[in-house]
Length: 256
Ligand code: ATP
Image (tube, rainbow, N blue to C red; front, side, top):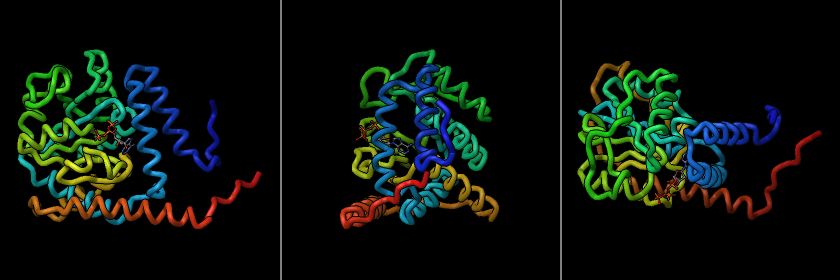
């Protein structure tokens, strides 16, 4: 289907088309399509914009990643399909960052496809295609990680992650940065640093801030972050949006 850039929901339709194609190509599982739908609903409530509180979280995330000894970003099928370029940009902005394929629904073929999408986007070294370690506290395949990546990471960036794994990573003493549009998800609530923003917007902002910080030439430190305040900021924005909508502000119909 041809999408018109003049359609008011062009970006969201394009994203859906991209994910559907990635599903046909074996990169994304059906559950990933459902996760995207849930994310879109929350983004709708946020006004599809980065909030000031998300921007603060993104800037802090850049500092944490640069300050970490072993920073790792975990990449699943949705992340590879939607934002392989953003992951590559982040890897360039944070030189020590390891990029690891980490799948909830793992098959060797899908792991290879995710790695291929990342390499095509410019990520040089992709870990996790053949996992060599495990993390405690999770059953079966979901525990499998790379011994040079998530296993030894001190700071883990987990975009679009599920709550169990986030909790398991925290239980191992790792600092977890989440990117998740749902401020009520277990992932957002367990993370040390929850970024409530759309994946592509969040990765761009974190990479841009990391580039700025490196330009200044000082090595940042891992400072405190008030995650409860960040989640409250996202919820307050959503509440305001709903209140306004309930007061009768309706979108104008499109001119034909
Ligand atoms: P939890 O286990 O943490 O309570 P969940 O069961 O909702 O969460 P998943 O179904 O794995 O976990 O969903 C992943 C999360 O990613 C969802 O909360 C969804 O809102 C979010 N999400 C989906 N697409 C995007 C996107 N493009 N950008 C940011 N967040 C997204």
